[in-house]
Length: 505
Ligand SMILES: [Zn+2]
Image (cartoon, rainbow, N blue to C red):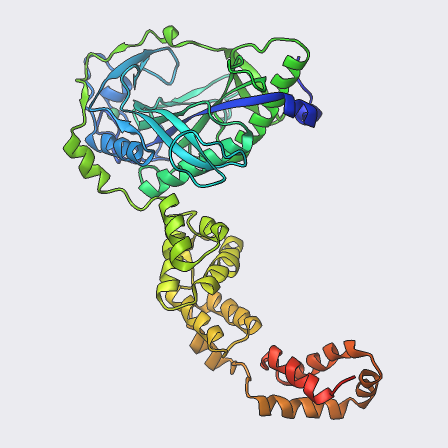
């Protein structure tokens, strides 16, 4: 029995009674220029079937040659994910038929994968410790294995005038190198799964081993989900949800599937082991086929490839190319710049953003002020313009220049915002704009006091009301002074001096 959309919500009582168990399998395309076993280009978006050769078309007699760069990238990812890289691993044939798989088998790895036993740290309210020193509120999600394989081609079922009754095959993708990263069933909610995938993607982006573009299919996610009564050790029967190609679908599909299985168990019915798909239109998972088992694929060692040897020396060499990873960068930035945990989290979302921020700080800006401006004004403006941090019209040095003018009180926060607007459209320095627009904050007490006296003299009625107890009129006087000074008077000073000049009410 399928649930309706409304059934997505499970009552709190049932949430306490049952526990979801989730594991993710993530396929990531490695960004080599050529394919894993031949010299064909991996460029995305080329005309269909233009990047193919006897090897990736699976023609008889063609022999695969392993791409060293693909191995280096997979090893790099494995090391960053805290995996143990096996000095010997082996490729295996996974036999199945599909129109986009011309060989009739996929070269993958089976019983001897490239790397095993890794982990990623995620945020978790449970925060249960499973070995190793961890921060509070974090949880370690095990990575069972990372193995290499080739991608299949692509079947295209729509987008053509005659696609009602025809499908097309594009083999450009056939043979693109993939790393498959399999997690332990350690995730306990859709939110944890979301966080795991976010962090995994972030690490892979930092490593620059994949562009992780989910829309183009460079990062694809399958989820294994089961539900069991809380306290039970034994795992429930799981369903696999295929092709969750956006973070939102992942979360929605998991929530739906957890609710569906919970209700089946609650009614005393059985969960069937099967493969399901997220149906976007119906907003639910639907059965695709009964789950296949490893033995269905008749794996056997790939006879055309030698075992893959990764020497200690090569591993060390790759280890040395690892950049500072997101967690380490976040911790360093918290201690170096005294940032809040949350701010450091936002600022390390990408290497480019963190790099931008650090340049602003290095140019002399107050680290906290810089963090507020980068996260607020700058990211807001870039988002509105649909731009990435690398395309910012305001350079880090220019932003630091603006912040210096706030720090030395040349500009009020409000004036700085208008200068910043101008910087976004002209890419001029803050100083140039301040000079050109005749801006700069009036902080001179005598000058402000003169203006205040004029304003008070010009508004005797309001003065009398103020004196008789209507103290809220202070806002009126502040407004008048700011108007007279074209917004350039330091508001804090105006307030102070006004109170003096108006005297006690
Ligand atoms: Zn080829």
